[in-house]
Length: 386
Image (cartoon, rainbow, N blue to C red; front, side):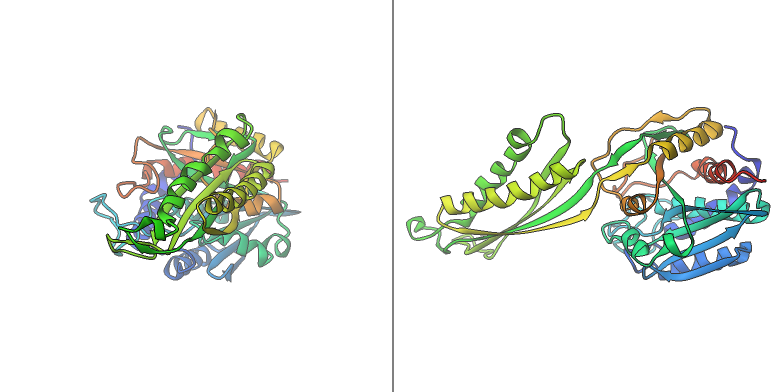
């Protein structure tokens, strides 16, 4: 693999950083230890500027090249872990109960730190690199908060690039696609109200359990009968809770929770409209009522065409090839940054490991040199030395 020799030399050190982060996972915006370590290392590398507290607990590092073209590009890594109890049995397994790096953000952070050290040493580029270390990717919208704190304008970022490891893709290989890549992810709560009563007297009640059962089935008609078959949409009811836990009581209230994943604004609008209409209609059919709370979370993550082509070219330089990535119905809050600036998001292979968000997942350290090299290649090609 034609990675930069410097990263092969640094692999033991970067691996140690990664495993330390893995042992000490932090969730959402509570990345205080992680953010502190990142800021400390960036200062030790000689970054020209290090700012903490962006997007609550995010960190931004600035490295200026040998010459200044006035251009600045952003490189982003996420730092947060997941509320999962680790079951890898690895020597560097999480020391924190019910928290683990089950999505590889420890690897993302370590790779960007490795690239930062190299770029600060060499400065073989014309312009400025903005290193973005983001909290709360896993549902907290840390990317949105960092954007709202003005990172793009404050540091005059013109383009922004991100990367995620990908189990099933060979270690160090890359894959990418232009256009819509990761789905918009929304959530809904449906509150069903009926009339509770004794399970032996169904004629006296308005059965919320019956309502819920019909509603769960009816919501799937959004995909099968409302959406254009060539559009991507997933509607999932993931939780059902009632106001009663007794065997002999028909509950007064039932709450359904779920997610909607779409690849276009039109499908997103359709899903919200139909969930509200179907819920009201099913509840009324059985004599009850429904109230729907629909929350739009991450938007569709859309890779920009020119930057995607450039990112793929950089990946081919590192690994010899760059495949076409699949559409992903998971969400990714790098979408907020790509709404503010043109850029691209790429996948780097994690090999034959457990899937992300699984208690036996672990980031593959052998992927580190390829990931670091891609970051460096992006900078040195996009901001060629004068």
